[in-house]
Length: 398
Ligand code: PMT
Image (cartoon, rainbow, N blue to C red; front, side):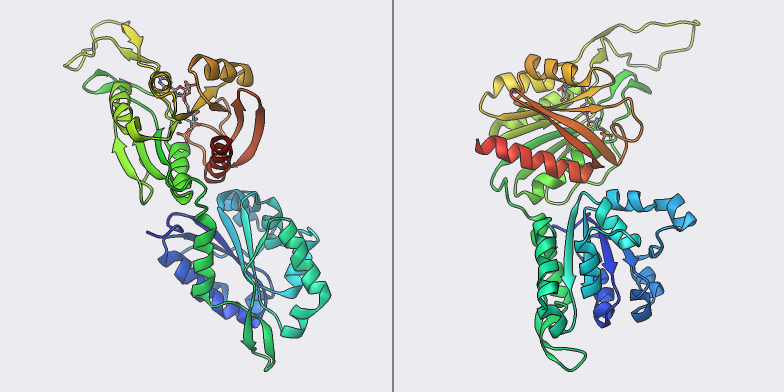
């Protein structure tokens, strides 16, 4: 399976003759399993029609910064948050100059400025323009801002010149993009992740549960796979597709999750407990549907096993990352859980907000460990997962 599988990519097209190659790039990205949205600048539309890209991606092409229809559906900030990566291919000399100055004067430059994900620029221009010191300075400035440059090819150009400045072939661009996701920073590590809610039965038709969608845990699983880890994902009932290249173990209740996780962590180096495990279960679930006899009823509840605390105690060498779902006093409540459950670190998120936390595509959190507390700003769960994985890799290295 490709490392672009299930990745969200914005393909930005600017106005140069090489724009015709962007159609092939869009097709190849999708062949690799990526979800592609296209942004075209005004001058790009002189070289290739948005309709071509719309037909290839099956999605409307984004062209205007201030388009009320687009803003209502997926505005520029949502687009920036949605994307795991923004690939600009081809990127003209003018676009590179504007981007290097941090100018946001159209949809594509604005999305680049608003994006906290990776940005990749594949330049295409005449060889003399490419070799100008000012162009090379602009490229250097982009590199200093951690923007990746796919250096142009050398060869015969559309204008008849020969030299550096040709857009790389679509195949080569897509290959290099795969390499960006395969960071390999946790190569060879075995990781177990819990995700989603648990359901605690009241009777055969009713249960106690919560709003977890599994998105955070599944994003961590995908990120860990890209980081080279072997991943076991133990998930409560969710409606998400399993990430490729990962072993998915579906469970329903907290006790089933404990049983699966106890077995899975035997060989693990890292355990991440992002599941929203129900804290209480019905002491004795009814084997038959409970009849509606009186106006009131009470349930006798008992605590579920604390999975992360048990596994941390029984596996002292394993790196254990917990999550804390809080609605107030976030840092102090999370730090209390870090200590009580004997964790190496905890990710605290505010589940009282509806733009992050439960079920949202985005999240914002604190990374808390024994010595530090670090803010992780609002971004897509995919991007946040990648940031968390880098922090784990640093901790393990130390
Ligand atoms: O799934 P999403 O919709 O993407 O939402 C993500 C999320 C909000 C569920 C996630 O980011 C999150 O916060 N997960 C932890 C939810 C939770 O149960 O938090 P808690 O503060 O109640 O528990 C603290 C820690 O103990 C957690 O690591 C939890 O997995 C673990 N726990 C809790 C109870 C229990 N019986 N066993 C446990 O292992």
